[in-house]
Amino acid sequence: MANTLVYKLDGKTYINLTNRCTNNCIFCLRKDKDDVCGQNMWLENEDFTTDDVICQFEKLKPETPNAQKTEVIFCGYGEPLLKLEILKEVAKYIKTNYSDTKLRINTNGHANYVYKRNIVPELVGLIDEISVSLNGENAKEYNELSQPKFEGAYEEVKKFIKCCSESGIKTVSSIVDGYKGRRLNIENCRKIAQSLGAELRVREWIQNGY
Image 1 (tube, rainbow, N blue to C red):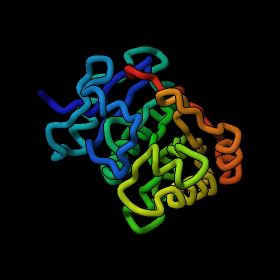
Image 2 (image 1 turned 90 degrees about the vertical axis):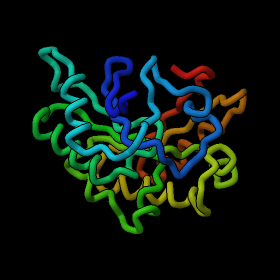
Image 3 (image 1 turned 60 degrees about the vertical axis):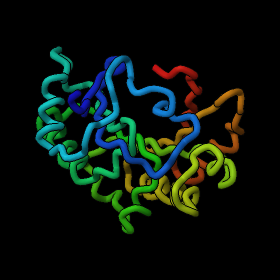
Image 4 (image 1 turned 180 degrees about the vertical axis):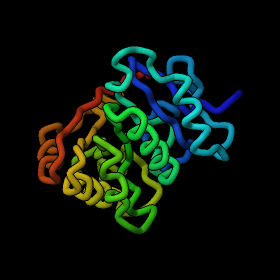
């Protein structure tokens, strides 16, 4: 079974860089299945290179007149920013060769904590939008839903959202609502997102995933 580094979903191209994550979200799709629309997301190993990702991207890029106007999202079964250098190199390749393509990262917002520095300036000019998982209106709720692997994660997420919004990159905070009937206070989450300079995106929990 070869690594699925690039896959398609709803007409968009996704890049799957790692199995690793600093969260263990109770609603995560990977807890229940190994694939997205029949495309296996679990990587056999993580020894691949930037060229390996680009090769798969070139095979799957849209063959249409509007190929440059599609969206590419760094999002898979792990936290994409844990592969920061490869992510930046792939983003640079896409921006250089497909300049009209919109690039987005879906992240848990832990990168600055992991790298012990503000990595957001390194993404400016490469990434058009960053979607950060807020996942709750306070630390208690966040910890229950996201089950982070370190203390103080919720505050780190909020600081990361603010860093992103202040950098000029379009920033969206996301929450997953409706997990097994559990409803979040959407308006409180919206106020938090707005106070950090971000929009709020509400994702309805899908029981069986894609």
